[in-house]
Structure formats: C-alpha cells, structure tokens
Length: 199
Image (cartoon, rainbow, N blue to C red; front, side):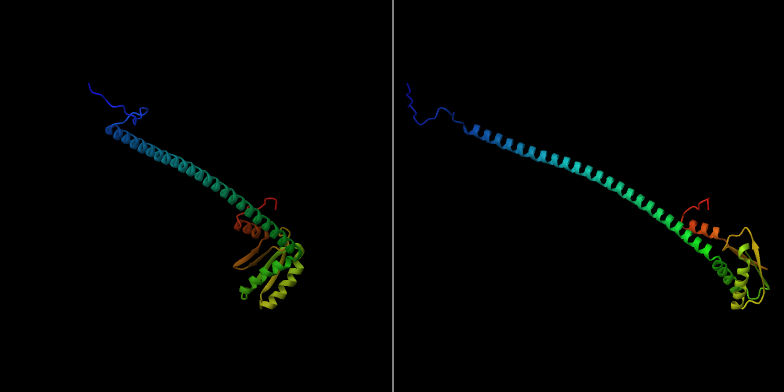
C-alpha cells in the first residue's frame, strides 16, 4: 500500500491545468482577441462607410439645393433687368416724346442738316412736314441752306398724316425719312422689347 502524503499547500478550489490546456486556453484567448479586434475594425469600417455615404448624399442634396437657389436668383435678376430695361425704355420714350412735342423743329433741323451736308449740287430739295409746321420749317430751311451753302430750290410741303417732328426730305435721286414711330420701334427692338401696339 502506497501512502500519499496529505498536501496542505494544495488549493482544491481551482483545478490545476496541464501545460497543453494552458497553451490551448492562451490560443483561444488570442484568437478571441484577434476576432474581437477584427470585428471592431470591420464595424468601424462599415460605420465610416455609412457616414461617408450619408455625407455624400447630404452634399449632393446641398449642391442641388444651392443650384436651385442660384437658378432662382439668376431668374429673378434677369426679370429685374428686363423690367429695368423696359422702364428705362418707356421713360426714355416719354422724355424724348415730350421733348419732341415741345421742340419738333429740332428733329427736323437735324435731318435737314444731315441732308444739306451731302446735297450741295442738288437742284431742289422738298421737305414734307406736319401742316402746322410749314412756315416755321420754311424759315428754318432758309437759314440752314445759307449756313450750309446750299443754293438749290427749297420746297416745304404740309402733310396732315405726319406727326410733329417727323419729316420726309426728297431730292431727285434719294431721300431721308425721319419717322418717330420707326425710330422708337428700332430702339425697342435693339433692347429686345416688343413695341406697345397702343402707341
């Protein structure tokens, strides 16, 4: 019979592991730690990808909203510019119309000066104006003819359908027409506006 000594130093609450079991436990712990670290890293990568996707979507929505706001601002600016041009054209037409109504001979004189500059050798010049301006235009024509050295015959005729300030200058091989309505229409057309049919 073999007698075994009583072991007072032995802790029977925890069993003693063998070196193989200890190595296996360490491998399991290392594998668990590696798997945990890999899972955390994959989770972070997935979370970062989700954040990037959300950020990209938010930036896309923001850029579309900004483009929409810029387009609206451009449209408002273009509308304001068109309104400003229209107001300026109406104001200019009104001011020019008032000035022309107040001094219709100024426009006629300008047309006659332009014609006389090139018509020194023409034998006669006919000027058609509004009936009410015949006498004043005749006096103006005589003064301008002397000033420009024109020696041909001057004829001023009254036309009831011509507006004050409008004139038709005619000579043997040409003529000049000063028509307020056509001038205003050409100005409006150059500004990209349509003339008012009421005027």
